[in-house]
Amino acid sequence: MRSELCVRRAPRRCGCGCGRRASTMVEYRIRPYRDEDYDAVREVFATSMSEYAPALCQHVLRQPWVLLVLGCTFCLLLASARSLLLPILAVTLLLALARHLLGYAWSTYIERCLTDDLQDIAASYAESAGARFWVAEADERVVGTVGVRPSDTEGELALKRMAVRKGYRGSGIATALGRTVLAFARQSGCQAVVLNTLMVQHEARALYERLGFCWHRRYVLPTIYGHLANCTITVYRYDLSCTA
Image (cartoon, rainbow, N blue to C red):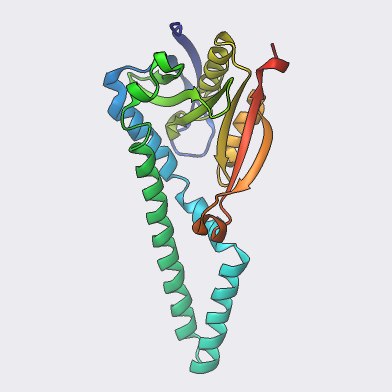
């Protein structure tokens, strides 16, 4: 089964990052992955995921136990040194250290993804395995990605690696990629499409909800670090049997 090329014109977002629409239009198309897209796909995914690092840091630093540690450290140093300078410097150093460690942990997660299914994209998303991978192309380069593979539950597909370059967001590319996945799932006779999102992926969750995905379940990452950081995974599900 071959995917048809999909060409769309959409307003380009302003390059200053304000989110306003510029007067020019961007033409893009959704097409199947090709081997020559390999480096671009990995770069789009890694760059897009790295943008969540600041939000992840803010999330962790808002956890009650972290605030308690910082508060106790500040009060103890203030009482012992009887000066504001030492506790302020200590808390600042702790915050900088925490940000560095969280950034390193997030980079490690991204690297793990790159050495998992994105290590050999053609093999991971081979048609023979009931999987597919698409890219969005605009301005003669890859600006968006998405893949789909059979999930652990029979009759379900898992949406994977949805990403769009920052300068091309808000132009409908992510929506088109999502609809491409849903169309493929319908043609394949699947019962549902599922996906996972992290607690910091607010825009992604809003996109999936607009596409018709519904909240399915939520759980904390079952690791020590997952519990300490309250790293929550939300699973979304699109029930194709109800929309056929």
